[in-house]
Length: 268
Length: 179
Image (cartoon, rainbow over all chains, first blue to last red; front, side, top):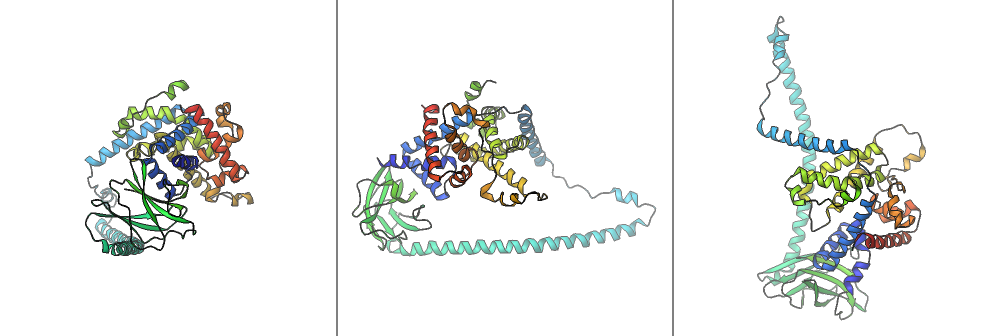
């Protein structure tokens, strides 16, 4: 069975061992969310490795536990102290006493002038430094935001033709089989209409086609096949979908998805 | 506390999330020994390992709100925190300026080839059910946090062999520890 193939692929072990890309991580979390069998297997792998680790436990010196709980107590105390007292501490008044006998007023004035000059110098220096980093960062953020807005706009514009209410638009991210590639699925939650658009997935061999699936209560529902160069193609309708997934299948499609050839998946 | 008693401690995550220190102490009693062993495998120094364990448990206490029971078991989550804290500590140690006494050292501490102590001292117990090779492969990846590629290089075996050993070892561990 397909879910079994996915389990046997070794990806769950890699996930628990921490050796997966962020994309694969998301995919495993998505799949285990949808398929109880995958979730169950994931827990088994975790429990097996936990057993291994527990079986090899070593004795921990007692003072560590004490240290940890002492530090926690301290943190809690200082937290509550910070909340209750935030008084302004007066600037050192001892100085005045020490310079008595000299013309202390003169010294005080000189000292405060110097102090103010050095403070303002420091302030200006730090501010200039901070400002330039802040500026560079905010520019970067600005650029990224612009890119994001432009990208979102272009997707939305392409789907403007659909401009029906209740449309949900999903950008599917390709997994390791199609890294950095995306495609768009639009789904009308009321009518159940599904469209695919802007497909950037790799071109397929002549005997293969991409197939779109909806996942509902752990069951894949076939939504039909599509080609990479298609534009705003209407797929089969679906109600109550919990995820959309794309697999590469033989031309014309398959009755059940081949999870070994999963290209993208998105949770709803 | 005997080993079996440690295994059987029931931990209430809900209570820890509500900042119940007694529940946190249970969590510590149950898992600190297993985590210290894993940290020791990474940093290879008892004193540093104890510091890392302490820091890791403080992070666990401070960030328990972020633990999502739907995504992983509490142990996997704690292991990731411990492993990352250990690797950070090792990096800090290796970037501390020291006088270069050995030309070899220059090539050792790039981020992916952190020297870890993959040995058998800490896993004698598991040799009851795993082969030495399987145990080493699982340790290198699970305990030391090496990627499969790095672990294969470290153990000087082909990647495919490493994967096979991990798979076979895990199959046995599942039989031993999961009903």
